[in-house]
Amino acid sequence: MSTIDFIENHRSIRKYKKKNIDPKILEKILSAGTRASTSGNMQAYSIIVTTEPSLKQKLLPLHFNQEMVVEAPALITFCGDFHRMRRWLEQRQAPANFDNFMSFMIATIDATLVSQNVALAAEGEGLGVCYLGTTLANCENIGDALNLPPHVIPVVGFAIGYPDEVPDKRDRLPLEAIVHHETYQDYTNVEILNMYARKEKTGWERYNSLPELKKLIEKEGVTNLAQIYTKVKYTKSSHHQYSNTVLNYLQAQQFMENG
Ligand SMILES: Cc1cc2nc3c(=O)[nH]c(=O)nc-3n(C[C@H](O)[C@H](O)[C@H](O)COP(=O)(O)O)c2cc1C
Image 1: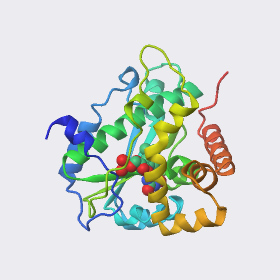
Image 2: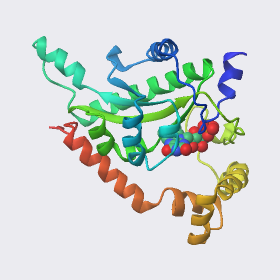
Image 3: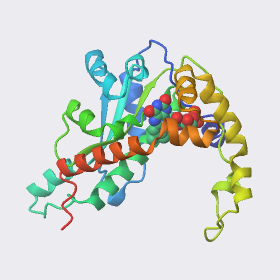
């Protein structure tokens, strides 16, 4: 399969076979993952692989009870990390930088890039992954459970294992909705509705096919996909709460010494 066909074949996997990942295969995909570009070649990230059942069980409620956390043979948490680098700086009489918001952003970008490289390498080895947005939304509690020192923050994570399902490929917006040539070209209202037309149909059908979500959709009386996103899945109040969690944790992890 060509690289592009392979990338085009991606789907998130939420059901896994009860089969462990050979440590050699895991090492191979993690090593390939670290070939991702990284700011200044600093590798401002750490990768935490959790396979221990009791620890996964502890992480389950912190990931809002998403069963794949315990059903997948491993959970990988990608953390923005300037702790390691700062320990090195200290021993080389270099200033203790990287305790500010910009450093957090750099570490976050590094962690995200390496995560997606690991995800692709994993898929190349016949594994499947599903990202967990709860990693950031609940970063403080997950950081505590994973014993993160200051200057480290969990950014993204995913369950990983051998797929026990072949889900349908999910829709994407048409390319012309995403790509702008030369400068940003703003949309007319009609263009926006046309670009979202397919998603409105497939997204509505998908979320209504999931019993938990369907219950919430009916409870909130929402009538279209846009309302599902804003009144059910990502409400203003939940995002205010998560924003505060992240900002407080950034402070606690000493990433907010902005001068
Ligand atoms: C940062 C991030 C967080 C995500 N969090 C979750 C999650 O908490 N639970 C989940 O089931 N899927 C999660 N996903 C998976 C997305 O729902 C999925 O990628 C999207 O619906 C597109 O489907 P596909 O990956 O199969 O193409 C997340 C994806 C990303 C990139």
